[in-house]
Length: 274
Image (cartoon, rainbow, N blue to C red):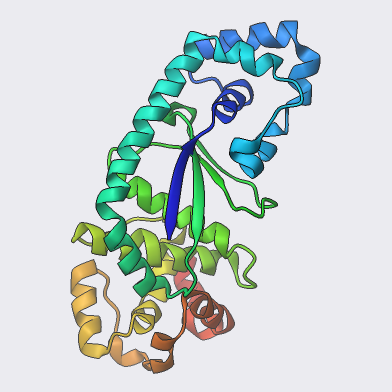
């Protein structure tokens, strides 16, 4: 996996114009431009799709509003924040990418190398955007965490979910397994402390029910399962489970398919509804 972090001025400006204002200065800029350039403003409503698709090759049909935004202090501040964010993420990525790729391959087991482009914007914009019709699978990211390694983990989760988004399985099972693989196991291996408390609260019980099978997927025997349970603080009765040895030989997509096809005996609905 290779991630290219880039900054695109048009995308920063577009989000400032079309996403909720994060301060009064941004709101004033939007109101002024709307008052004076409503026709152009309306025409730009879907240009974020084109920017994410073409990135550095994007050329607007009319750059009037973009140029006016570029001249504002609010944009210049947002650009500085984006550049700082990029530098911090790059430093964290460069420091961890060798181990990330090693553990990612071990957990996900995809054979082909993937190249992704993440278009960064100011974290104040609070943006995560994926355009599903985009064949390049570029994403926009402007969401900050005090833990930059966690930010990378969240980016990898979104990229992987985007990559396998059309898999023919239950959406909740797919999300839960991706969280187990990335937000939990990959993050744990990188930080050397369990991160199995991470993930959507809504999927917590589903992840717990899938957890024994995920350990089988990782190749654990019963003794190793005990070690994982102690590490992660997740308990289950091992003797109630038949070890599915074949799971350790498949990739994550096939594991998702296995869990989806066998959900009737994997998932206990009465526990999920408590």
